[in-house]
Structures are given as C-alpha cells and as structure tokens.
Amino acid sequence: MVNWQKAMILWLQDKVDILEYHSVRVRSAKKSFQLPSVLRLRKYIRPHFSSVKVKLSRQNLFLRDNYICQYCGNRFPEKALTIDHVHPVSRGGKHEWTNVVASCGPCNNKKGNMTPQEAEMPLKSKPVQPKWLPSKEFSYKSFQKRPTSWEPYLSHLKK
Image (cartoon, rainbow, N blue to C red; front, side, top):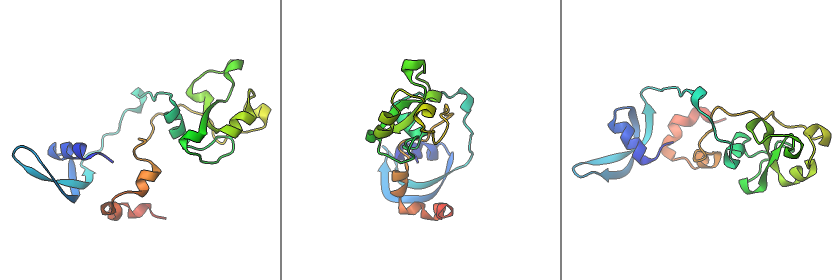
C-alpha cells in the first residue's frame, strides 16, 4: 500500500502498470491525472535485509509478536501490552531483541523477576531479532478496510 503521491511518482517514472483508477483527478500546473487505485510493479527488487537493522522499540516489538502476549497467547491492543525481559535485567538480562517479548500486564506481573522456566510460563515463541517488519500502516485492520477495487486482485487470499 502506498500513498497517492508515491503512486503518482511510480507511474510517472514508468515503474508500474495501472490496473484500476479512482474517479478522483489531481492537477499539476499544465496537466490533469486520474489517480491510480491498483498498481502492479513492473520489476520487483528484493531488499538487502543483511544491511537492515530493525530498531528495538515498543511498537516494533509488538509488531514482531503480532500484539500477542507470549505467555498466555491472547491478542491485546497496544496499550494493554508491556515489554517483558525473558531473563530479568536485575539478574543480568539485556535489553535486546532476543531477550524481550510482548506480555499482557497480568502475565508480566505473574512472571515477576523470574525466568519463564522458574515461573512455569513457557514462551509461545522464541524471541528473535527481526530482519524486517511490516509497516504499521498496513495492519490487519487497515487490510479489512481495503478499497473494493482491490477485490479482483486479492481473491486468492480468501479462505
């Protein structure tokens, strides 16, 4: 998903084919253009993930863990999640991707200053440093609100 300005740039640079248009038009000083709605890249360039470093932040951690508490397995809104250090910082644990997970408040309090083994709370998945993360703008919620013009191109995604 790209904004309309990026869509126009890609189109004018001849990097995409336009499959559908919006009914809205935009104007430059001399021309008028119909806004593209569905684009197809002419050539996909795979990003070099080895050079990408995903910053460890609260939002990125929750994206990595898909807003799921790594102890109880339930999905929560961002405000209801906390960051838990698998090996507690007070016991030598570090604040790094391989030692932090998303946790709901009750699970974080229950685990306290223990390791998951000591608390008998096994992790749902092993914490790893991600090579990339999806854009928060293209979330499940935004995907559910996708334009109807996308439907013919996404029919293979339906169950």
